[in-house]
Structure formats: structure tokens, C-alpha cells
Image (cartoon, rainbow, N blue to C red; front, side, top):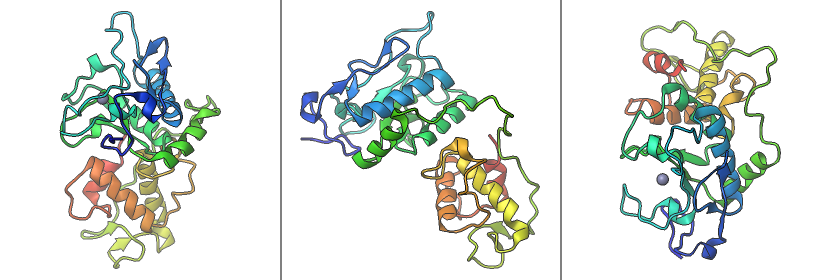
Length: 275
Ligand SMILES: [Zn+2]
């Protein structure tokens, strides 16, 4: 069987890969459905959260029936088989977010999209993050069956409460500290040179922890949802290998082309520490 470019088997006959399942939110369907099973569970969660937290899927004055699932077709932006051909992609409010156009969601909506994708532990990629032609309506599976099964199990049975309880509201973002390092110094790996501040001294651990919380907040820490930035023990004030990785991920997504992607210099922090 051929594969779509994310590695999932694709066919003009969905029965060949286990069939399609109906995906419906607020009475709107992603015709003609998406790949049945775990992929469907992940998309059900994604679509419901997009509808509740980012943008309604339907409004009386909007174009209807512009939410799509499986389709056996070539990728319109590249010469390969689209993820729609394996039932592992959806298009959300397609007429409001046309292929090739950037900026169709507000900054606040984009931040919420990233939080939702963080809750899905990075198994879904948003077309707004494509480096070539943007496709902001588009979401696709980018991990294999094992990862999808794990995340599907999480979101199926009483998913994490998508809206925080109305108890004392925690601060909405990690806050920002006043940059306090001499010129030529940076926050980075604890095992780095003296100019690399990584929490070796307890006096710098609050700053390192703050940077780690921002990395979580921006959805750059695998396995830690953005919403857990304040509570996760991943932010431990010590900059080791996983923080290198998260920092590099953040750079790749938000500030590419920098000479030291695994380190946090002053200009990096100015960009990192904002919602
Ligand atoms: Zn699409």
C-alpha cells in the first residue's frame, strides 16, 4: 500500500487501512470522516478544543461544510501523497484559513492552538508551522501508531480538563525576570563554560526555572502540556540535556537561524518571555 508522507498507509479505498470514522463537532462533520481508531480519537479531541477555545466551527453567517477529512489526493504544496489520503489530516474552517495565506488566526488564537497541540504531546502538526507554503486550516498526524495510541488513550477517557477550574487563577504566564548576566554570558548547559549559567549556583536557579517554564508554555517540551508550565517538575532550575533540546526546539519554531540554538542569550530571552 502507498504511504502518505507522514508514513501512514494510504489508499483510494479507506477499507484497505481500516476504514473511516465520522468526525463531528457541534453538528458540523469533517466529510467524509477520518481514519478510524486512535487517529479519530486524537482528531475528535483536537476539533472539539479548537471549536471551544480557538474559533467556533460553525456560525450562522459563515460558510458551512468547510471542514474536511479523508481525501485521496496529492499534496497540493509538494509532490507527494497528502496526509488526507491516509485519513490522518483534517482541515478546519477551510474557507476562513485558505491554503497559502499566513496570519489568518490572531496571536491569541495561535497561542491557544499551541496549547492544545501541547496537550496532544506534539503528535499533531499545524499547517501554519509549515516552513514552505503555509496551510493554516490544516492539521496532520506526525507520529507513529504507538504515540497516537498513547495520546488517544489519554484524551478518550475524561481528557485533561481543557479549561482550568475557576479556583484562584494562577498567573497566566511565567513572568519575566530582569536580565542580569554580564555581556558575553548566557543561560545554558550546567556543564558548559563559566559564561554558561545553568543552575550550578543556587542563586541562578530561579532564572533557569523561569526559562524552562517559558519553554513549557510555548509547547517545546515533549510530554509536558503547555498548561502545566507552573506545576511541572520538569522546570527544576537545572539546565541539562533536555533543556538544551527544548531550547533548540523553541529556536527552530520561533527564532530560527540563531548561532547557538541550545542557549538562551538576552535577545532570545526577550522573545521567549512573552505570550
Ligand atoms: Zn489539509
